[in-house]
Amino acid sequence: MHRELYSAEEVNDVIRACSRRSSSGVRAAALIGFLYHTAARVGETLALEAKDLDLDTGRARLLNTKTRKVRTVAVSGEALALCRRWQDRREALGISGGRRPFFCTLAGGPVSTAYVRGLFSRLGRRAGLERRFHAHGLRGTALVELDRAGVPIHVIRDIAGHRSLGTTNGYLRTDNPEDALAALEARDAVRARGKKDKAEE
Image (cartoon, rainbow, N blue to C red):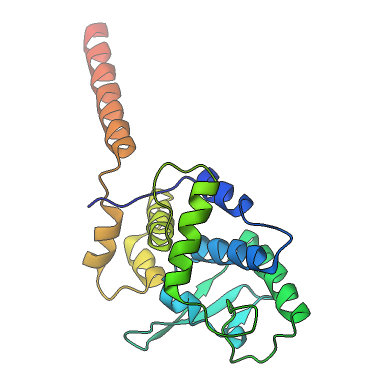
């Protein structure tokens, strides 16, 4: 299954493309960081209420907008730093109330997925990416990174909020040419060692 995957450097390039001076730029950087470091869906991220994100413990309670199930995800230090900057801006804008979306408009209202789609496309181009930059790609990248780090698939399933291991496996099976090349190179290295050992017998 083909999924667009990004390197950590590419994600950081897009975050750096966000304006640090404007409130919308600070919000965009926090949103990208949150999506990348939690593997959350964009819909449940935009539905995240301020009261359900604990910036002290690094925990967020996400509501699946389709199944209405709630799960808790960990938010890493890097993403937390970006979210704290956005929280400071929210307060400066006078946005209060725990039931408002955390990633809200500058007036405190909900942000649409269509807006995020257009925003990420613009930021990707600004950062010099040659392919489309989008929220679902961030989710897929995060899950594949967990798999490559040796995290068991049932744990990845729980982080992703999937119902079945089959769905999770679909995310982890990519046609990334780098994966294929690495596998072939590893196979050839094993064969070469075997031939060398036989020659030395």
